[in-house]
Structures are given as structure tokens and as C-alpha cells.
Length: 309
Image (cartoon, rainbow, N blue to C red; front, side):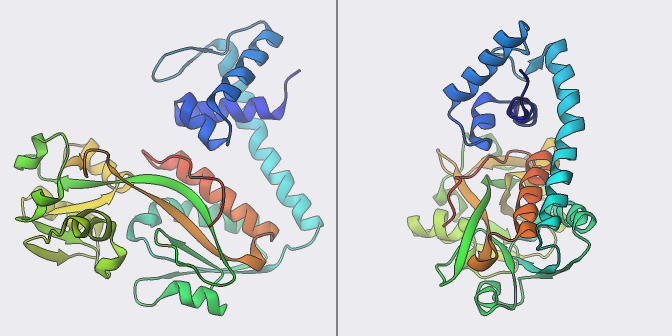
């Protein structure tokens, strides 16, 4: 009567707080997900959650099944890892680099969990800010690169991790703070604060300002997100960050977050992997762990398209 897929769908609904996003994460249509819930409720003779509530309100029956999911799903993942070890592929190398200053927030818990699960795998992490990591991946010097700027390279596959929205942080007293959204021309008189990387790797330039032929009045850089936020809060500039990186500062009222353009500026974060490693058990597990951790810890991210590039 009760199947693992039911527990996974309930778990996804609680994590996303939305039928639409839960369906995206599970790679189902919303109608298929709704049908699955309806079918289960008819089997049990019990309602699992109250429709059209936000946040989703679970019934006593739904909460009991979520308790079971919290107990069983981690055990299932652990068993799958053990089986992968039995099938071989327990040892190996996972050398990675990131092209994202704000990715440490979810990547470090992922790495900690992965180390515990795969102690035989040699794990190493490097910052991709001082060298070109994607060519190093193609040469075999690296095994995985976290990037939002995939480049077509022979033998390299890109697995989407999640989609996010880039937002603009402005001081609470800034005139732009009251606007419904920010236009490219609004930044022509602003100091734009960025991480110290090439502008052709920054979406704020390549996808927002340059298409409108707009140049900010000044550009200054900072290595640290918290320093960028201090500069913004004190009125010394504006900066664009992923919604998850900006959320903790805007939620506390430290700065104001604004949408870039009327429809928003969205991007996808990818794991670039050598194609011959895609089927490695520990690589598959790392990608699953990364997705689970990001969805559980980051505000405002959503499931990315399933197909790899």
C-alpha cells in the first residue's frame, strides 16, 4: 500500500512548500504529483495535507508519514552507498574546484557528509578564482567543477544542480529600494561592487548591463560577501548576488534585495564532470548529496532541468 515514492513526494513537498516545485524536483508533472497524492489518500482513507495553504499544512496522518520518511530515506541512501561499494568503485579521486564565491555555504556541508560516506575517496577542493578550472577539468587535473558558465569542451558533461535568481542588493535608504524592479539604466550612476573575477564571468554584466549597452559609473571589488554587504548598507555601492547568498542579509533588514529586470535574472549552477566519471558510484552520490544539501539549506533555489549539457 505505502511505497517509497510516496515518502519521497511527501518529503519533497515539505522541503519545497509548493506542489509545483516539488513536482519539478521529482521530475514529474504537477498533475502526476497531485494524482499520486490523491491515490495514496484514497488508499489510506486519510487526508495528508490541507490543499491551497501556504505554508503547506500537514494533517496528523501526513506528519506521521513524514516521521517515517525522515527515518527511512537516510537509511535507504546509506544502503545504496553500501551496495555501490559491494559492486566496486569504492576508491577513487574527487578533485574539484568552484567558480562561485558564495557556494561554500552549501558545498562544505556536502563535502563533510560525502567524506563520512566515502572515506576511501581522495577528496580535494581548490578555489577556481586564480586559474581556469574548466580547461584543467578537460586535461584531467580536476574531476569536478562547480560553475554557472558552462563551456562546450570535448569529453565534459554538465549536470544541473539547481536554478537560482540573481538579485541586486541596495541600501535600505537607496532610491532604488522602493522600485518594483531595477532596470539596466538605473545602474549607470552607481558603483557596482563585485567579486574580483573577470566581468565576462559575471551575469550582471553579460546578461543585464551589456545587452543594454550600460556601464556602471564605477566598479570596485571585494573578496568577502560580508564586506560587500557592509559597503552596500553604508551607501557606498550596490552589488548583485544569488538570492541564497543575499537572503540572510535582506531577511534581517540589513540591505534591500531588488529584482533585476521586470522578469528577473535567473541562472543555473552546474557540476562540470568528465564524461567517463558520470557513472562512478561515488560521483553519482556526491551529486545527489549536493542537490539534497542545497535544497535543504538554500533559500529560493529550485530544481534545474534534468538533462545534462
